[in-house]
Length: 113
Image 1 (tube, rainbow, N blue to C red):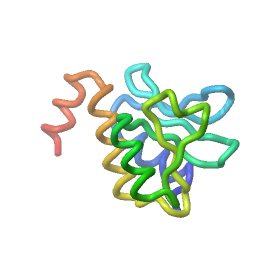
Image 2: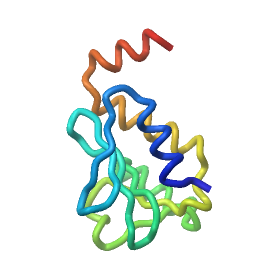
Image 3: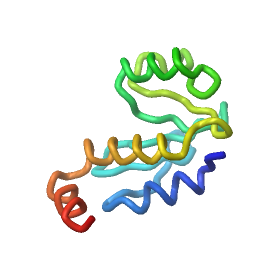
Image 4: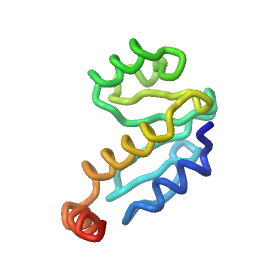
């Protein structure tokens, strides 16, 4: 089961990330851009993904991934914490971080790995 604390550990281990709030609830950013939100209504994380990937995830694994009327217009997917795979979570967050972090920060991080 993925928890907010698990997500916090994964995200804050990436350079220049920060925890903040959006609409009064936990969220995480890099370079001033949101990486992940916590949806209190569904008590689950909201991940950034391309529309095509979101639709594929929901189609292939509707017990894990879903969307809402509010989130449908955005490239995001909600995931049930007791079902989502931790490695998928980690890879998604790294991908989003790489896309949004400053290129020099990503290059330095890659060099140190």
